[in-house]
Length: 510
Ligand SMILES: [Zn+2]
Image 1 (tube, protein in one colour):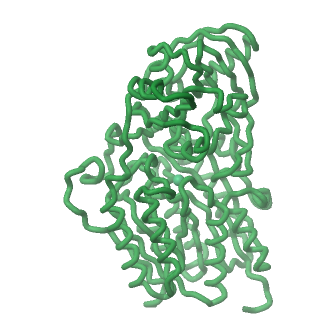
Image 2 (cartoon, protein in one colour):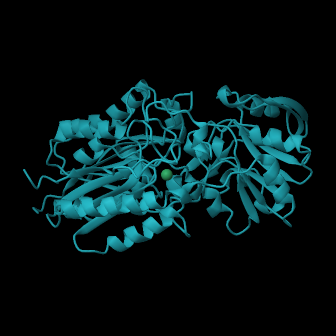
Image 3 (cartoon, protein in one colour):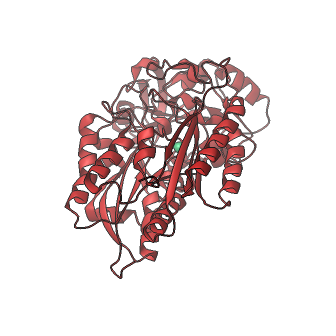
């Protein structure tokens, strides 16, 4: 290396999209979380996101950072073409204008979709390659729930993903990606890479990487494999199933040092193991009535009622009242918390004021395809601007914004009414309006997995509900059109599939 510091371009467009949600993602939704252009990207230093980890390694390496743009937002429907076009240009324009770039780090989700582009991460990589050519190393960090495509494997120098679910390792994933980039720049390694996929579309409910589930087994093996010679990075993937792209599947991406055969063999072996363990990914699901009956038989609380079908963290609008309607019809007398996104209802509560009675037609105003509103009469107990600080996870250290929010008390049920959906990490949303887990018998949860982490010390039991919505516990409720059959779990009786493999030789054969 010369004494000139390496110049590293850093950028990010990060969203987990959901093609089963009717409302498209516009720039406003990103702005609600963050859109940092140019030098503003440095505002992410000190947070817990990937870019903070990348920046820290760049500092240690005394590299010069070329800040491109970084944008992230809560999962939602596919990005509109205009939204993606804006963000893509925000990332590419400083790259085009840069005098010299020696390496690129991109923090992407991997399961983003755009109205007219099913593989925007591959599209971004193609655009970066168009500008920089094939030889500049480009390392991309991904979510473990990424849809990894052939194009991404072909165009990236290395793909590195989260190894933990719940995702408490965004920062360290950024560091890992950056270290791979610098080792490549220093000439210490020559990355080669392979992707192996099997046709598994799994919901997150049993996808945790702790305990005894399939991903936990895979993950432990991956960490062990990473200690072997020439092994640089082993990433296992369980795809976010709420998109509809032709070649969606789950498996592994393995990055090796100048050994594509080892990468392929290792990736194949992990994909095969996941196939063998696939049935463990299916959660046991409950009707609301059965879950409440079982919950009532358990002493104390809280009992978690997991309405994962309306998971804002998976792109759902958070406006479902299926659980609330069920609880009202069961005449719940135990103290219960539920949440719903309904901006008009929040405004009505604010207009009435704290302590006032209101009557509302609540829910299903954002995506009416999944149900009908429920009429409630209740007392406004609290109003909030809806701001809260994430205590960890992929938004750790950044602010969440529910918008104008209210707590409406309807009998024994406290309803948190929010104006905007937000990603669930722990219990920040409830806690920010004074609803503390220890006070409730039942708590409505709208995520498939993070609750295991948030409530692990307090919950007496949890039940995954078989409710309708764009992120259901049972994906047989969704109608896929582009993802060709057969795939698991829709075709449970299918034969063992051929493993789909893509290898990037890392220029070894050039
Ligand atoms: Zn994820």
